[in-house]
Length: 302
Image (cartoon, rainbow, N blue to C red; front, side, top):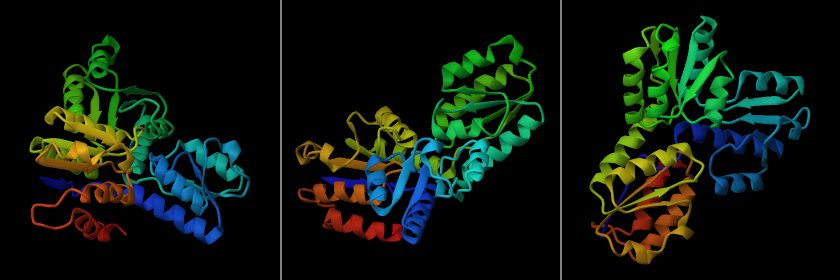
């Protein structure tokens, strides 16, 4: 049996930056509030809470004058105004790639253009983007893109198209093609995160040569869900797990080649838990213990 772990598995730059900032400020001040879940991983949220990072789901839950972390997903513009009115100290961990989208839609909207966002309606990142522009429309996939482009009033309407950073590249390409055919006054901004592209490309390659794929991440994580969808399209046996407790070694023994990937919001310690469980019965083809190999690869993450 051989096991291949995706090099891109685990925290992306934006998430790592947000988590590090939260830990630093909690240690410094004893407590910090994260406005919304700092990361789509309940295990990590629980770990951070023990360190003094508390999740606030509404602004009313944040005391006046408190330290507040803006998560990597970003927030609408008015949230900053409301926090400033409460005299809160803001620690902004908005991902730079998301911040770039905010600037784009702010300018394009000011120029009188309709903002069209390809992504998941209601997702924190998309809600944040909508909060930086005027009129906007969210399209969740190819079918909605087709229906939108076929509306007669959209043919000459000034439209600026952006995309949620974690959208599947193939969905974006197909949707853009559909909209371009009918919407003649269209500006296209490819805002898919480079790290997302790399993660999805590696998952595609790995799934294509594996008998089984293990995708690790929270069920609410958009980017992990994309990895699962990609893996399922190329591999007949895909397990989507949140932690090691959801996987048994008996399941692993049936396969010769196992591939492992994890979403951008999956912390290294959860991937290590999975690796530790697998190491009880699994050896890398080179003879290295699986857990020892993973421990070495994680040194660059800490």
